[in-house]
Image (cartoon, rainbow, N blue to C red):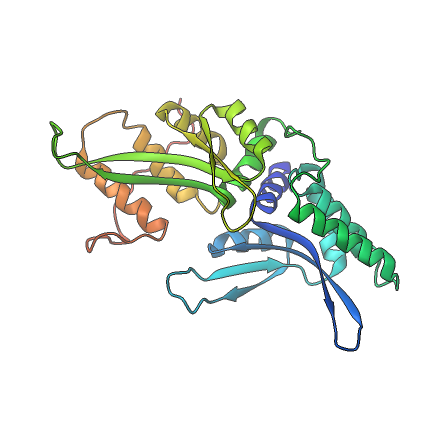
Length: 297
């Protein structure tokens, strides 16, 4: 298998994966531990990609609230299978590498009756997942070239955003109506990741309030269209979840100021549909999309 597949999977695990050990105590005092290694995604092809490359199974969760997208959960059916997967992606993991090392150690117990060790491993993963200051991960991503780009693609598929917004012009503006702007950004609580993205691709960084947790969110954002094009070109060969959106955004930024409001509107609508946001009654699934040239001559 290509090394970039391992790097992409590692980026996806670092973004949308769950690596932990849960603990439950029955009424009779018996304590049980449950190791978990899984990925959740609302985009089924991403889950299918994982199964095609690494095996495993998936299930679907439907929300009663229609405002929430149904999601799919990918996981393994055996400890041996999980160990094999962790061995493959361990060199490429970054944010959750320590959790993965501990989880592998748990799987390798192979059912041994050692309550003290299970409790210790449970405590260690819990601490890592709840306290950002408890980590020995390197402060820089130790990957280079295409492998590095594939890792960023996995991370972007998990926590990045590639879309087009429509903004209404001010009433006092010389040109009334709407204008459109492409957005490429990524948010994460691990600040070192944001620094690495900025180092490679430029852009700006801002701090946002905690989202569904107690850790501050750091957002990396590209403003310059040339920088957006450069980033998308580097990751699009490996993208799965956000590939279609990124193709549209790539064609959009390549317009480079050309005045074509109808085409920009179609791109905005097509991108919004892919991102699950229906905004107009004329938003159809058969909107014409331009072909994408990944590498220009």
